[in-house]
Length: 291
Image 1 (cartoon, rainbow, N blue to C red):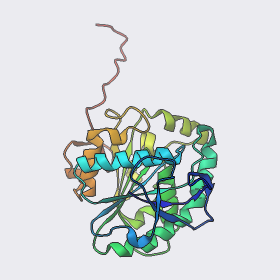
Image 2 (tube, helix red, strand yellow):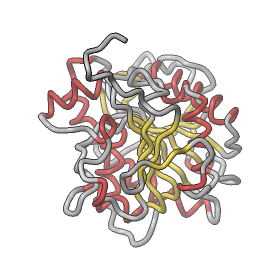
Image 3 (tube, rainbow, N blue to C red):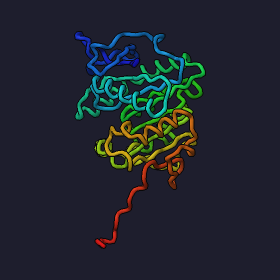
Image 4 (cartoon, one colour):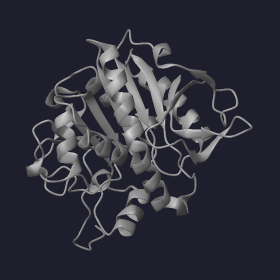
């Protein structure tokens, strides 16, 4: 798999949490999960552009080895779900420690200019082929920041899909970075889980709701090209999205261009542009009766 990397390579050829100068990135190719010694340097021209391309962007608390393992697993699962395009990854220098949440957030902000430069150079090379992006957790914040500051006109990403987006749940409203970002995508699909323990902690730390926890604060204010998918009955943890065949099947349909309201397995909710996959949540018995 090809990797766009803003991590600085150490003398022993591994990648930690040191970062390249702002705006800089390098290309590598890897075939197995590792700390980076086996990764081979590559050039932009080496990345294939013959098919639609899915770019993966990880979230908070990920060492390089964690990233490579997750990306290879994601590629296998999305291919099993039916996506036949190319899969590449982007990595930023997470500290790989849960207590470095705000340190990681600073690393994301530092990496955004590099992602913007890459997208600007890579997108034209695809020609008529689509460019899709899938983010996990804090990776959604990285892409929102990147797109909100992009100066070009028109969409630069075809399908932007977010798993467990660790961003404010009002991020898509007017005046916020997400609202500006969706102008740069053909369609945004945000997958959320109301029982996500990590985003529950994030909501407490940020003193703010999370898009990937409860969905948009005001669904009626969603842009027409912004959609939500409630995965609460098929997902248990923060990082389980790619392990769910229901979610990955839904994602493959999105990447294939299926209409948001016509994807098998989705049930529309009463909220604008919002769907549920999996069984309907069981209602708690509030009567206090055991019968």
